[in-house]
Length: 510
Picture (tube, rainbow, N blue to C red):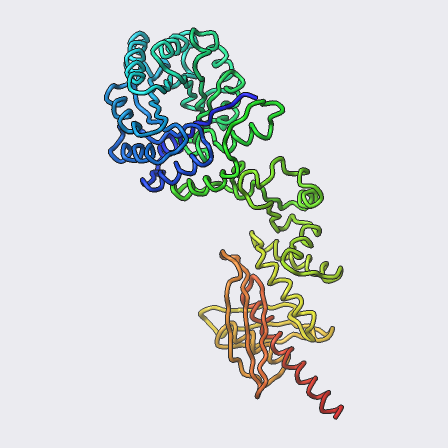
């Protein structure tokens, strides 16, 4: 196995994402986690950029216990001096200096000739090496630089004291085969065996991780990456993807890192909060859906043997467990498993009925939460003991008034329909119930709360009726608040009726 060094640039390249600026405290927290994860090099910032950046790099240099702490510097003497000052308290300091090498950059941005850039490399790499023992040199836009000239630049940087040579795909232009070939073309340069070659890839074409791994196959032994793939434009190669790709596919990528992958999810969440950049649900490794399964076929396979649909264990990256997401694609096996996890053990007929209700609910709302399923099953259990139940409800409401409800109920197998009006839609619904199930009870409580979040959340309604000294409560749940209200009211009336029957039977027996 060949060891690959992980160079994390979340605090430098990641923070350059528009809108992703972080506070000093947040940067120190992230650096601390990266250090605990055993990331090899932490690029803490760009010290010359601002006093705040200098302070954060300096503070991180004081705090980090194990990792190399690196400061970025342009190939300008003042930048290099500032970077050296910022990292001087680090146990293992590094200066990372860079200069453009591609014809496009030389002509339009730097306005320098190739020979002038070679002279800049000689002077600035030499300056950095006089200040620290660990110097990284990068040829910006290396992938669009002619190979022969890039070889001249690399040879110059090595001769002047660079210990790491970074060949970045600055604009995310390269393909994996091209990126690998570029590194292979550097291996016979004088001194190449004495330095570490590094990848730095951007995701403009969605190839950042693929290119980084291809660079390793070409001879690179350091990968520059960021947590969550944060970075300019489309972002950088994602640390979590690189680390887990190497770990999971060691059969074809015989390399390893020393990163403690169980800290990945923790780091991902902190970076998401600090940067304000939420992680997309389907993001590899750290996305909410990375270890979640909704398809019934997938859920069935997962319950029989996890490796049928998961190539990594959730615990490998700090996730507690696989999530069987309950939705319209879920099957009976997963539904039964979820019910058992929630403490419900139903017979076959009850399970079939509950599953039918679940499917109906899943067709009506995007996310079905555990609380939704609990409410659904509890509502079913309540209905199973009812003499009367709600079959359908139509409510006409609006500013014109009066509000009207058309209610259909099942009374022991007989369907009864009634229409009623009221001072509001709920009043109209309750008046319709009273027509079908006459009673003298007084409504003493009507309460509504959302079971889960969102505009499609299930409503759970609680009703309390009082008739003389008797008090009964009813509860109903539905995505339609008025239907839930009708169910709750009917449940309470059912209980009152059952109490009345029990009392009558007791009197008759006496």
